[in-house]
Amino acid sequence: MDISMKDGRMRIHHLGIAVESLKKAVAAFETILGRAPDSTEEVEDQKVRVAVFRLGESRIELLEPTSPESPVGRFLSKRGPGIHHLTLAVDDLQGTLGNLEGRGVRLIDQTPRVGAGGKAIAFLHPSSTAGILIELLQEGEEGQGSDRCELECK
Image (tube, rainbow, N blue to C red; front, side, top):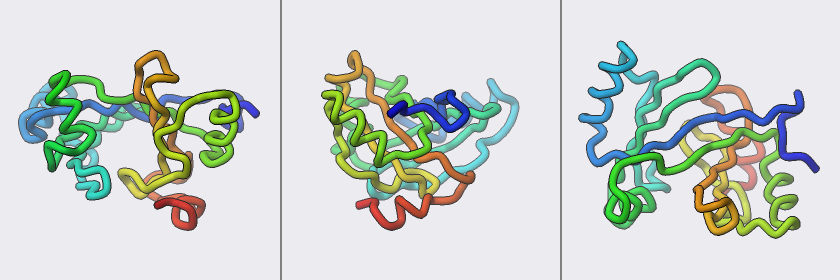
């Protein structure tokens, strides 16, 4: 099973960037991009506030931790601000997770969970991905959680 999209191409969905201050980071990106973020939200499960800037088919997500004990909070304390993760869109998240695990890829999430925008997501462990935290995202209509996530996400 290939983890690519139905059209044969996988795509970068977004880059997650850990920031210490969402207000300061948003101001910097507003200056660079010449516009306000497309959306902002708090993802309680992941203990982050998120500001999203859409750039064509991809986006930049600025991530501010709401707790120093959150994954983004721990990342910031160890490494400082910067790229936290790369997100790749897939058509069948649960199937992709099973396929990757079968090929020996270490998973952080065995089953999908709800991420920003209500999307089904799961993370791959950096020990299996050349040190890069990779998030997989169930592709679907923008702003809509997938039916699979609503049924299967923790």
